[in-house]
Amino acid sequence: MGLSQQAISQLEQRESIDPKLLEQVAKILKVPVEAIKGFNDEAAVNFISNTFHHSGLFNRYCTLNFNPLDKYVELVDKNEKLYAALLKEKDEKIALLERLAGEKKK
Image 1: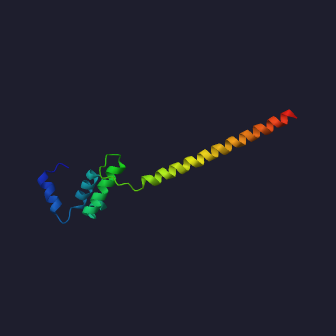
Image 2 (image 1 turned 45 degrees about the vertical axis):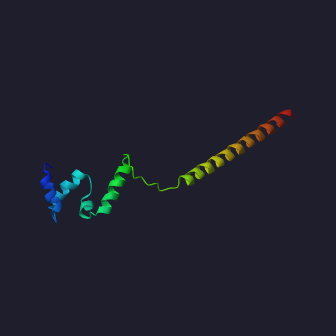
Image 3 (image 1 turned 90 degrees about the vertical axis):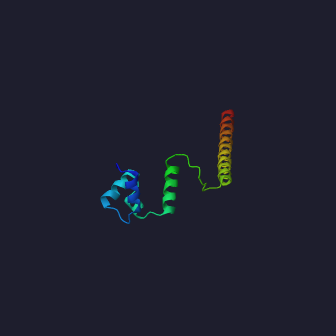
């Protein structure tokens, strides 16, 4: 925007900002105008945290929203079901081959 640090500080201290200037600031910061209008510290921290997390950048304050042990148990369960399905398919193929071999003998 070509503003000095002093001009930016003055903007930050204002109670209201011209809507056109607010749109420019929002565009430069890549945030919606409503995010600036409804600004509060907690919302800003959440926005920044989510932006870094979803953009693939390193987020050292990452919070896991799942229990890794639950994910492991889920994976084991899927593997057991897959193994059981493969065994069933193998048994069905053996039974089919035995039946075909029995028919050939006759």
